[in-house]
Length: 75
Image 1 (cartoon, helix red, strand yellow):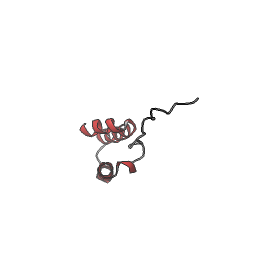
Image 2 (spheres, rainbow, N blue to C red):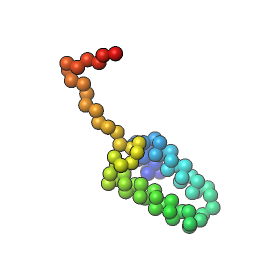
Image 3 (cartoon, rainbow, N blue to C red):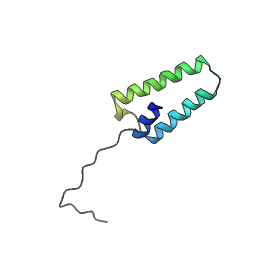
Image 4 (cartoon, helix red, strand yellow):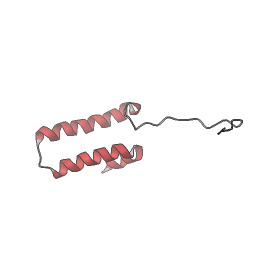
């Protein structure tokens, strides 16, 4: 649950993807051939988020500077 909360703060889309995977894993019969690679993939995603969050699509946002005092938006 803590993982989903942290992902929800960063990206609702990624939180939904991981939530669906975890729910499917819990509801389907246990199979080591599927569970181990899935756990490794989720762990790898977590490590990638820690090391290089900008490498994960949809996770990092661009920082935009506010307009200067003299700048006016033109339609």
